Length: 181
Length: 80
Image (tube, rainbow over all chains, first blue to last red; front, side, top):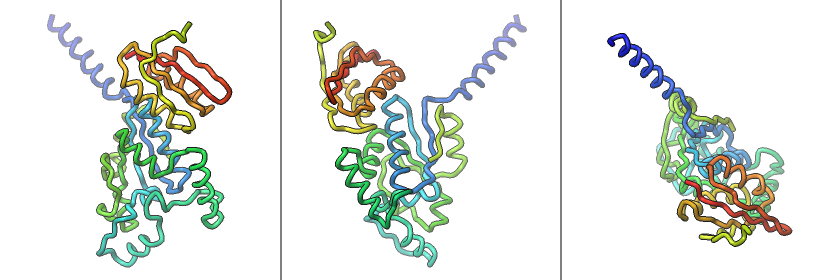
């Protein structure tokens, strides 16, 4: 009888272990790029994932980080490098360029007007939709620190968190789909 | 005839591009009761592939798909 109980306990703990390893119906994505086209693709996939019944979490790092700056917010007290980076890098979703066919900004302007004409949502609209659908965004703390960004200058977004690689890997490890854009 | 099926809600998604058709359908389907039917009207040719894929993934039944020129019409039954 005791032996049987031991066996049952062993099976139970095995099942629990398996449950921890079973991926959730979730999408985890690294958004490394900061260009209009690539961030748009990331947001289309993320909002599509929610429509498909999944959870979605986007981890914005490196060139992706400036896209999350709020154009209206200005923070003081940055050092020289922080100020320089702050000026040179795009400020928010309206400020970003295409990754190709830039043509000194002309390509981006053309693409934006084409998107409007073809009824494709703009980047700002996609962020709004993502927020409404509950897409989570994690901003890489290390990238922010490197580029001299402060938390106070990032966008107001209901599901915004700050984190590092462990946070991403925890999310990715329990996700069915993982992408790097 | 499937056309006699009672439609509880109509979503006019004409002119909308990816990902809007599936995003709006996924919202709209939650606004009807299980067993009821949503009619979705689209013009995005991609929705012909996307809406069935959405149905297979979420389990909602695409009862009927029809096309008239650029106009596409889906009847979708909420299953859960």
